Image (cartoon, rainbow, N blue to C red; front, side):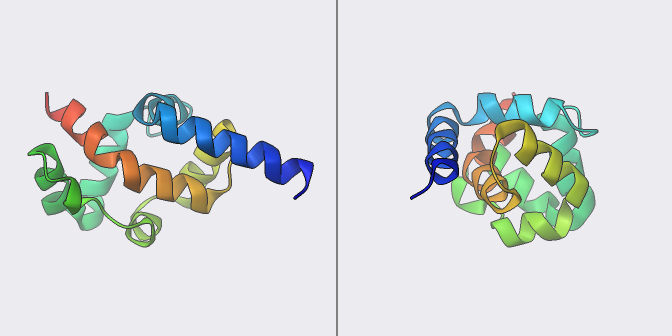
Length: 108
């Protein structure tokens, strides 16, 4: 395993432990301007029922990384990935994993 792989692995470990807070930071650095912009983008992209279910506490309603890829602007995904030092596929997986918590925070 090379140095880059080690650094990327460390970044992913940090993201998993910090979750929604770091994703919020990454989202703030995009035109989405935070979790509320992400939620709005998902609703506009046809994932409104899933967003509503997550806001009600149904973590199993989280969209898959592929669904997120279909709905989110590629430039936004790239910006988030760059700001956290991971690749776009990894950021989509992390968003999918932590989206229920973000959605519930936005519902509060």
